[in-house]
Length: 596
Image (tube, rainbow, N blue to C red; front, side, top):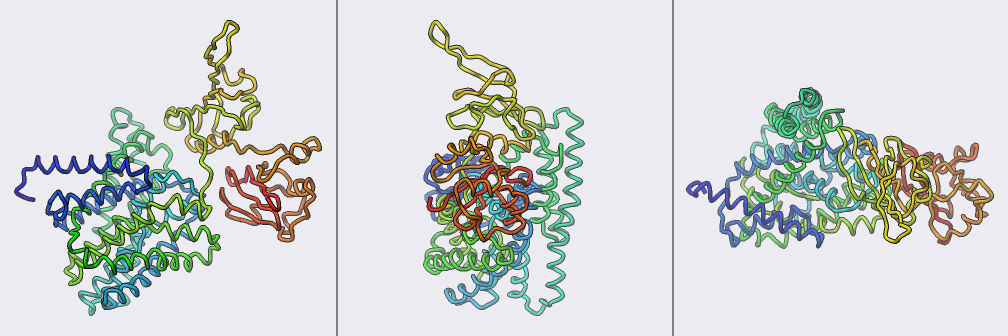
């Protein structure tokens, strides 16, 4: 491509990106992953496709792939909250290390049978495809429209963000074994492992705090920095990524941890900068998948297609599920959550980038490994990526969608203005704004109401929220919401409102009229609900839950120590489901009667 006019290259690149975006937008209606479209567009533009572009510069591909992954992981870290680590740090680290090693070993055994590789090459292939891909997982979790419970979503996000170092370590170690087995010793392996993870973590945390402090200080200076903040943050993240790699550490781990620190630093990143970074991350993802599609030569893939698809089946249906199940055994995850996380082991750009390493090192079977890795990625995106909604529904890890605001805008640096239109069944209806129990960080400002006129017609009025009286169906209420309370604000308008407290005798007829599932406040005493329906105390109830009329919140938290929204607790014939949590407390509980 060196003799082609640079303007023609720019034109082709821009048109391919535009085609990928347009087709990706259309494909989302059919559940096809957005990134898969860019991969296919790249293949069609390649030398065996209608485009006929011959691109085989693996050095450039490795450079672009690493740059893109650095941006993607930095952006992923920025959007990960510290509370996510409190929920799922230990299981995520187990999956990112032991889980990757187990998956690599199982895939290697299958590859040896299917392709006749020797153990070193088979294990190398297993290491290349063993880790889940941050770009694929982050984009699908954001774009699928599925709201997962915190434990599952957090585990998947952290695992995909920190499992690349293990895959890189295994890949480099096995390349060394294939090419120079005499140089591979136990001491060298231990040193490399400690250096990859230790230096990567140290660099990420130390320089992450330095970058966060710099960004916060620059914001205070004002001027035109707001528009340059995303560029400075990205430059800092990529510099950290490259420096850590140069010193022999894991740049993948370092840049993710740096993003985590910056994203959680008070005053570190503005909302506008986060939106700009989101655009940069999408550009990095789409450009990388487009380029990787250009690298593939389909005529070399066809002879390997059947055994490679068989290996993809082993990876998706045997290796990943078995590795996840064995790794998570000590953490006692519900089997349905293990099943979903097994299926969400998405492969993406990382395996293809790792497959370039053997090509650069001169491994004899490197081209075959690259083509097999590509087939596995294609199969994973097509089969697993397109079935996220179905898998979430079958495994019951999805949560009901929260009501969306009619309008939303940033208000200053720490809050948003949100407008919700009240519909039948929403909890605030019939309650005044001052009497409703708004979450901390949520303040009702005004109500937009349509008032009928005596002479016919109607009048649109803006009323102070404190003077609007009981809220009505059709009202639009405007809230001032702190950034950390956005989800809690949406919960206020969930039609599954809590039933009245059952301690009062006057509430009995109302409660008895409820059929099937209903929702209760978390502070309602369990014994009151059971007495109301004439149900015995469940044998499974712990003694601690019986003391002083324990609330539903106390019962659930005593039985499920790390409870999250969506958790289900069966106590004899009754079923409790966590509907809403705030600050570690269960606020609303779904209650299911026997036989319903």
